[in-house]
Image (cartoon, rainbow, N blue to C red; front, side, top):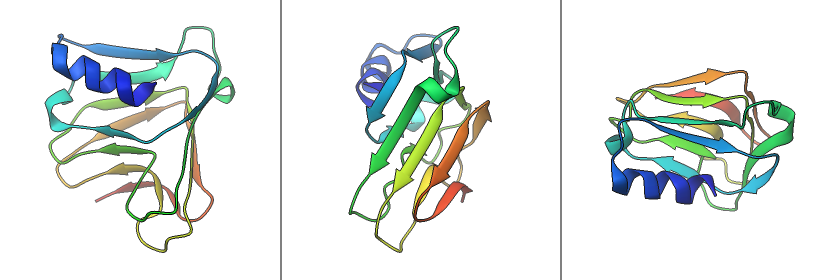
Amino acid sequence: AAAAAAAAAAAGSPATISIRLSPGKYQERVVVPASLAGLLTVEAAPGVSSAEVVVEHRTTAPYQATFEAETGCTGLTLRNLTVRHSSPSVANNYAVFATAGSSLTLEGCDVSSDTGSGVVGE
């Protein structure tokens, strides 16, 4: 849901984009392109706690964070989310990954990787 919403929002190019997630477990990987720099906030819906919104990516492939800000994507905000990651790969096991030249803000998030690092900035 979050990945599809981010892709749809990029196509419309509004001034700012807030993706508000209802309680639930979202099994997906979200890659945020540079075209959304300074525009995107992914957050729990108002009145919903971070424990109620889980975005999780479990994979056998390396180099796949749950949330990834691509090079040039600055100003991404993740707010009041639980972010989980797991992969048996030994390469780049991150729940949240800010690539070189990108930046992000985490507010009220619970972030972890069963097999690597929670948050990594390159």
